[in-house]
Amino acid sequence: DAAFAAACRLPHYRYAEWQNSLSEGDDIIQARKFWATQLNADLAPRLPFGSTASGKELGPDVIPVEVPQSVSTEIAAHAEGASLDPETLLLAAWAELIRRHTDRSDFVVARNSSGRSSAQAESLLGPVSRVLPTLVRLDRSLRLADTGVILEGAIEETEYWREYLPGIMEQSSPGWPI
Image 1 (cartoon, rainbow, N blue to C red):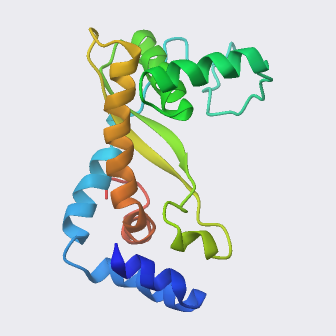
Image 2 (cartoon, rainbow, N blue to C red; image 1 turned 90 degrees about the vertical axis):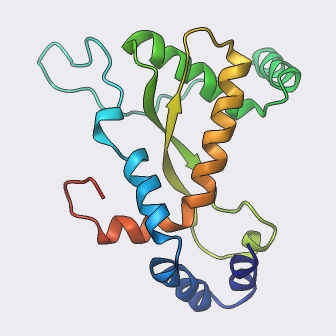
C-alpha cells in the first residue's frame, strides 16, 4: 500500500515506526482474527507414526536434495501449464501429501516469505523475510493444479496480513491463541 511504499523510501527507523503503527490501526482486529485462525494449534498436521522408535516427537527439519535439471525443467513446465509459479506447485504437492497421510482437509503449512514483495522493499537493509503459517483447505476431488490455485489465494491472504504478525506475536500470550 502507499504507506508501506513511503516507509520503504525513508530511513530504517521510519520503517520501524510504520511497523509499530500497525498495532494501532483499524485493521488490527481483523489481523488478529486472521492470524488466530492461521496459528490455531488444532490445525497443525499430525502425521501417523510421527515419532521415533524412542518415542521422541519428530519435528520440522531441512533435508537438502539435489534436483536434476531435467526434473526442474519438468516442474517449471507443469507449473507454467497450470499458470502457477514452481514454488506454489511444489507447495501444492506437499499439501496433497499431508492431506493424504493425515486424512485432514484443513491444516496449516509453513512457507517462507521474502518480505520484499514490492519494488520499494527491495532497498530495505537487513532481513525482512519470515516464515508464515498458511491455512490450507482442500477437497479430496481436487487436481494438483486446483490445489495450487487454492494455495495461491491462501498465500495472497497471508501476504496481505504479513506485516501485522510480528506485533501480534509480541502482544500475545506465550501459549497461544492470540
